Image (tube, rainbow, N blue to C red; front, side):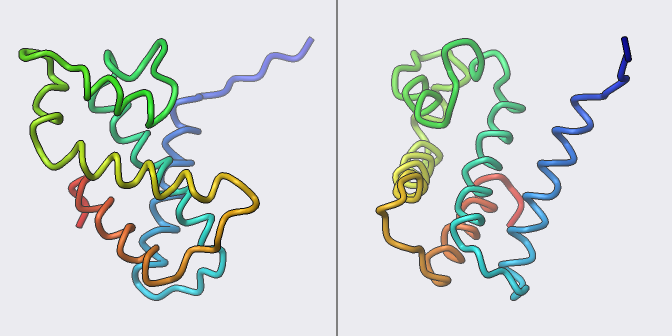
Amino acid sequence: EVEIDWDIQSAINSLHNKRMHKVLDFINGGSVTDLEEIVKCLRQLVEYHFKNLYPDHYSGKTKNLGDFINRIDHAKVGSPLHSLKTSSVLSELKTLNGYSRRFNHTDSKIPTRTEVSTYSKRILGLMGRA
């Protein structure tokens, strides 16, 4: 029996950093050709960001961005999520969720560089990275 010492948090952080670098490289004019990959990275970056900000609210039955948006929609006054409900964050999350879901199916249209660039900048702004 072989025991492997693996730091899962470091692996997750490394993956997050790779995704962030892909998006930043794209925004800065890098040679990104797979725009659908950038859209997937955006969604994954947002999910990771909010999982870290709200670990108690992004767990259990909350498995993806859509579930998290639903939790924000139903947040009561006093809940940490309520402030997201009453700000532009909820609208931005809904917009990204709708946009990124379009590319989860093989019969969807291909994103354009302009729209991916726009969404990339909006998402980085939402995450405080713009």
